[in-house]
Image (tube, rainbow, N blue to C red; front, top):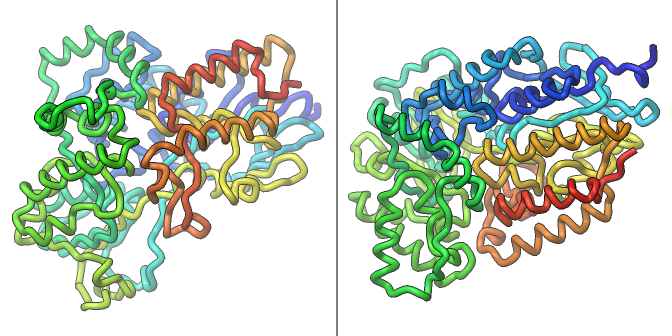
Length: 538
């Protein structure tokens, strides 16, 4: 029997994280022979890998869990409003076992290459264990922040102490008490680590190149009364998430900045600063992310909050961003992060004043001095969204390399597919809506839509799908137009594909759908209702 008659699998999913777990569930529901290939030794994706101290949600726990099963919603109880990594990993393992998905997953399994066999209309995958697998449909669920990046610093391998990127934190406990610890990076991950370990270590030195605007998480336990209320309100909770641009419980204030008095602005901003989660970012006046004057005023308000919380005036100024306004980069949420710098054992090094020259056997050498450490923690982020694709050698029609096709910026239709790569379906692809929203909410949208597409193809005798180049061009233009009037489009961040630690990522690119989740779903629904216009089905 030939590959054309019977590839080994109807569908292969790469990645057993939030997206891959739900996609597998839906594929099995469709009756497809499917498997998941996962690099880790268990499911969980980002929650399997990111075991660093302080790792937790900044989405409310009850908005992060899956919504597809009422029984699952009823039986699972989150212990905190923003759950930590261990609890989240337990949850995802619970989901896998509840729906008997583990038997369809292959762990410790790295995909090195995937090439499209045009003659037989199938994908051939090469694994690092030497196996070759074939499948009709290949679904990419590697995650948008799964390609960890180390900084470009000489001597990293010379250090004699313990050192890790936060994404690759050891599974065994790390002794921090009394240790001299360095943290390089103050993005969302760095902020969580610093907040968590400041009172555990002997000395903590933070190496900061670019500060971020941070705001209080306001986490807390969920008591029995709240638990009952949450379970009784899940329909309402998910309905709110469907209606808000970010897929959270927090929607924008419809008023514009200049329409209210200064007193009213300050009243709203004080209330947002004391509220849980992303209210401080997403429930602001509708034009704070668009109009420079409005953004500057709100940024000044947050800057004053930082000055109030950090005792040393010079340190406070170093922690206040000067190169971007509040919310134009991803906002880290924190618990007593700024207060950490009031401790005698915590020190801040400004890398703009004294850059790192190299890592030494004993620590870190800057232009000013050598610091000695027992542990170095690299909180240096990710090659966002496209990086996970680049780390697999995807080859499409005619042997074309995906990384070459996306070299000057990714091109997709709806973030779901890219031309020249038939039957490669992307759950969190560039220019898509799942990468710019509360992730599980966006993922359920993407998985449901892709599953409906596959069902449509089976019902109509189609076995191949890819987007038309013209549809891709129109989609990119639409995304660019939506992004152009937002202040975030001018700022270097992972939102705009910037990463100084990765070759070719030193400029701003369009990576995410910026128009909000409801509008994105409208596009998906229109395409589907018109017979999947923009796609070539055969």
